Image 1 (spheres, one colour):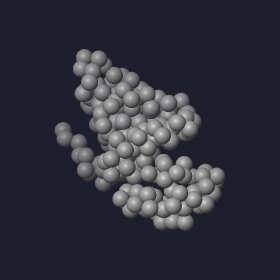
Image 2 (tube, rainbow, N blue to C red):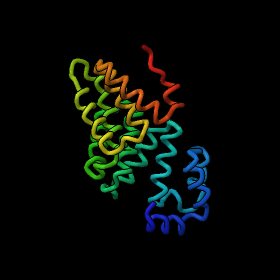
Image 3 (cartoon, rainbow, N blue to C red):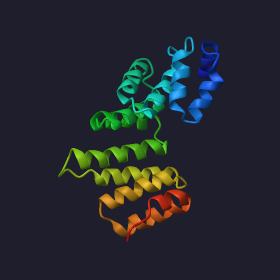
Length: 196
């Protein structure tokens, strides 16, 4: 959180600590309740981001899209907001809109590995559900590789690489990526056991 946003939020909301605690714990219902009942919170720019993330967490994606579109009216340069808007569009299967938003997030924050992962996941979903016959897996693979150039220590980036390689039927590479994911997070590795 940037200092100027925190100052703005502190002035607007006496419950700042409680809201941030609920947000960090991903207690979306409590977070949303605290934001919507605190005076001035809904108008606070910082809390529009918190509110949208809570709405996404609660599966209220259409409301999150409305919230973020309102926020984006005045904040076109916020990569996090574009990322969240892309997530919300993806959750309602609006992949064209999601891809446009994540492209904007990548323009603003090209070194955020999460942006590249999210784009790859949309490309896979779009290929599977919308564009049969039009191959986007190569582009998804490129995005996953870009994410892994930025970080090699995030299990979720390796998980995505595994998914892309499986879609492309590159089995030895997929197994290798899966093994790396399992090294980074044995619990997830056990959950997503490789079936030979």
